[in-house]
Length: 397
Ligand SMILES: Cc1cc2nc3c(=O)[nH]c(=O)nc-3n(C[C@H](O)[C@H](O)[C@H](O)COP(=O)(O)OP(=O)(O)OC[C@H]3O[C@@H](n4cnc5c(N)ncnc54)[C@H](O)[C@@H]3O)c2cc1C
Image (cartoon, rainbow, N blue to C red; front, top):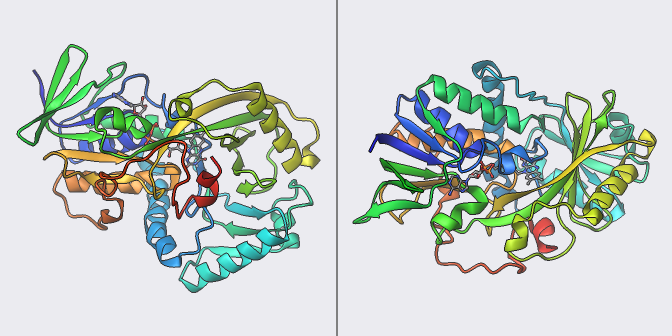
C-alpha cells in the first residue's frame, strides 16, 4: 500500500486549492475525487466573486469575514500569473441592488455602518449612480451597495488550474475514485478506503462539501440546492455582477462572463428535504422562472435566448461560514468544506489550512472556521435556522 504525506478527498475548488498549496510545499499528496474534477458545485456555480454577501448588520462579524475575502482577492491576482490557466478573473465590481424604497434605506444604512467600521471599498449608489454604471438594469431598481473590487471568474478553469499545477509539483490525482471511509485507529488517522483499494496517510483532508456527513456524520455541512441559467453570448453590456432579492423572493445573482454569456442563478422557492437538495434535475418551473427574471432584470436587452439551465448542490453550515481546520474527532483529520460563496474565500483559506498541515507559519489563523463548532448540534432539514449571515437567503427555504 502506497503511503502519502496527505490525502485530500474531493476534487472541487477547495480540494484542488489545498492540494496545490500542499504539493507546492513539497509534500507528497494524493487527491481523490469520486467523479470528475469540478463535478460538484465548483463546476456548476455562477463564478461571482462577492467579498461580503448578505445584509448582516453585525459590523464586527462582517469585518472579520472581510479580512479573508480581501486576501482571497489579492491571492487571485497572484494566481493569474502563477497558474497556467486563464481563469478569467475580472474585477468588474458588484452591486447589491435595492428593488424598493425599504431596501434602499436598508442598504444605505448598511453601507454607512460598513464604511464606519473601516470598509474602504464600498459606496452607496442612488438611482442615477446605479443606472450610470449599469444602464441595462430595469428602471424600477432604485439604488445599490457597490463594491468595485468584486467581480467574476471561471470556477472550472481556476479549479483545473490548481490541479494541473499540483500535478507539476508531484501530486497524484485519481478521479472516479470514491472514498468510502476514513481509517482511524486509536484516535489517529491512518488513511482511507475507496472500494477495494486502501491508501495510507497520517493526514486526511475532507474537501467533500455537501457530502461531508457521509464520511464523518458529526461534521455539520448542510446541502443546499441552487440553480442557474446561461443566456446566449451577447456583446458586453456595461455593468458589474449583482445580487438582488427579487420580488420578495430569495437572492438572485447575475453576471456576464468574458465570453458574453449572461449567467443568472438563485435558489428554490419551496422547502426541500435533505435528499431533494441533491436533485440535479431542473424543473420546467425553475427554468421558466429563470427566464422571466432575466427579462425583468434587463428589460432593455429585449428577447434573449436561454442557452442552458442546470442545478447544483453547495454546502453551507448553521452560521454560513465554512468548516476549515483540524478537527478534534481524530488526530490528523482536517476539513475544508461548507462554502456557500467560495469564490471569494476558498483560495486564501486553503492556503492557510495548508500551512497549518505543513507546519508552516500562518499569516492569519483560521480559528473563525473551527470545524468542531457544530459537532453537538442536530440539524433537521427543512428547518428555520438562526443564520446570521445568510438569514434572508436561507430563512425562506
Ligand atoms: C448553482 C450554484 C451557483 C453558485 N454560484 C456561486 C457564485 O456565483 N459565487 C460563489 O462564490 N459561489 C457560488 N456557489 C457556491 C460555490 O459553488 C461553492 O462555494 C464552491 O464550489 C465550493 O467548492 P468545494 O470544493 O467546497 O465543493 P465542490 O465543488 O462541491 O467539491 C466537493 C467535491 O467532493 C467530491 N466528493 C464528495 N464526496 C466524495 C467522496 N466520498 N470521495 C471522493 N470525492 C468526493 C464531490 O464529487 C465534489 O467534486 C454556487 C453554487 C451553486 C450550486
